[in-house]
Image (cartoon, rainbow, N blue to C red):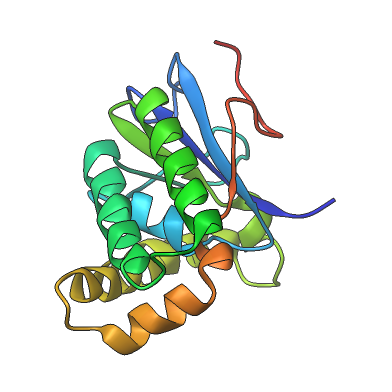
Amino acid sequence: MANRSYLYSADSIPTEAEIPRRIRCISEHNWDIPLAHKLMAGRGTTIVPSMIWNPPIGIAADYAGGAALLLDLLRAVGKGLEDDAEFAECVARTTAHLDKQQAAYFVLETGEIVSMTDDDPAASVRRLASEDIPDAVAEAEAAIAGRNEDWLASVRADWQRHFASFYSEALYFSFPG
């Protein structure tokens, strides 16, 4: 079984006292926190208690802002892959799922990924929220603005790793509706 990052949407942010009442499944990705998850967690990023594990290793972010950033980058990537039917299908599937599962917040669950090393999981999530996610957002914003063509070309060359996560209404960790 693979270690995964999990992305959900919810109308409230998890707290120490309770998790959101309605949690919608967005996607899961094996062995990594992909660029797509980082971008969706890239607006209003804050560390929150995990809905799955004990340490404070969840990340919440603004849904609308994160979804818009991802979709803008997908359009920029697509301009260099115009005849790629597989990429177009991935974008259509992702867009439809994000529209269907829309809420106020994204909640990124990182526990399986940050536990793959001997590093402190909470410290890894702090680094993710303060460095990795903002760096990914800055790269994407520059690419969308036409100022980061080399980075954009590298993303295009390996778009499946960045964007072809498993999007579904039911993930390995799902919550009662």
